[in-house]
Amino acid sequence: MSTQQVGIVTKQFESQLAHYTSEKRGARDSRIVSYLADAFDTDASLRAAGTVRICEFGGADGLLLATIRDRVAGKVDLVNAELVEAFAQRQAHASIRFVPTSILDPAFPAAAFDVVIARHVLHHLVADTFDGTRANQARAFAELARITRPGGLVLLEEHVNPSALSCRLLYQASRVATLIGLRVPAFEVTPYTVVAFLTPAQLAGMAAKASGGALQIARQELLPVPMPIQWRLTLLRRNSGNLFLACRIAALR
Image (cartoon, rainbow, N blue to C red):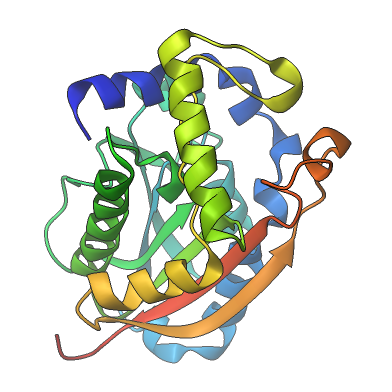
C-alpha cells in the first residue's frame, strides 16, 4: 500500500474508533475463538512449547485476543499487530502487546508465532488498481505464512461475496466515492472507505497459491451474516457472508 492508501485506511478506522472498540461488533462470537479453544484441547503440538504465541493483525482494541485469553486452556502471549496507532491506548486487556505494523510488511521474523489471525483485514488492503489490490492481498498471505512456525495455525475470517463481478464493482464504486468525498451513512459509505472483497473460491485459492503451498486448509466454513435491509435490496451484497479458514503451515517449506 502507498502512503496515500495507508492514510485513507487509517482515517477510516480513526473516524470509527467508537465502533471498533464496542463489544457489540461480534469479536466475542467469532468462529476463530471457538476453533482455537477446541485446538488447545485436542492439539498437543500447539501447546508443546508451553506458552502459545498468538498474533492478530488489525485487532483494533484487542477484544478478540482478550476473548481468546479467557476461553483457551493454556498460557498465551498475545500480540496485536495494528496499523492504526490510535488503538494503542484502548487495548481490552493489559497483557496484550500492541505493535504498530502492517500485514504487508510485518515487523516480525520468520516463524515468530504459533498462531496468526487476520479477521476482516484483507478487503482493506487496497491499491490504486484492482489488480494491485489483489497483489496486496496475495502478499498478505505470503507474510502470514512466513511469520507462522511450521505446524502452526493461520486463522482467517473474511467478508466474501459469491459474485466476482460484484467484488470488482464494489471496489470501483467505493474508490469513486472516496475520490469525490461521498458520504452515505445508510450504506456505510464514507470518504475513507475503499473495499475489495473476494469470492470464497478466490480467497481459498489465493491462500494456497500465494503461500507457495505452505498454507494447507484444514477447515473452511461459510458463515451467514445478517445484512441490513438496505444492503439486502442490492445485488452487490445480498448474498454476502463470512468465510472462516483454518490453515496449517506445512512442516517443510
